[in-house]
Length: 145
Image 1 (cartoon, rainbow, N blue to C red):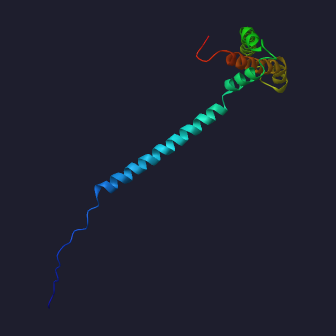
Image 2 (image 1 turned 60 degrees about the horizontal axis):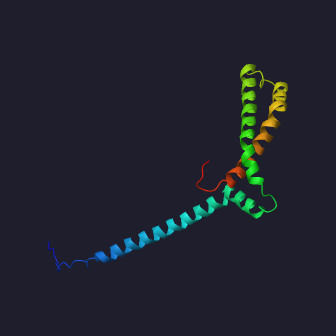
Image 3 (image 1 turned 60 degrees about the vertical axis):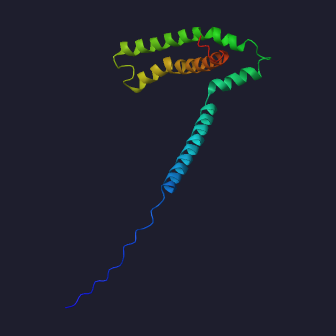
């Protein structure tokens, strides 16, 4: 049995220059940074679109000549509305606490409870939210009082 071995000289593969890998990494990092900047811009745009205070500031600026006292009136009545809302919610909580779960136990008592408190809490809460936003929009930025 004869075996023949053929040996050739080993040639090493050309080494990949380190600058290519570094350039690829730098390019990827640039692309990541660009995507992050785009995401930040989109988030800022979304936040601005949902900023109700800015919308009411624009409303007050646009209608300042027709309603010059609107902002100050809202600021002055806001504490009164907050107090009324607090008293109403307190009465609601007292009623529920004193009823020992009987106020919501059946269809009739649930209807009575909603007739007594539901509409008033809902409407006063809506008015409070609207007046509060206008009062907040009337307050200059940076002034927390």
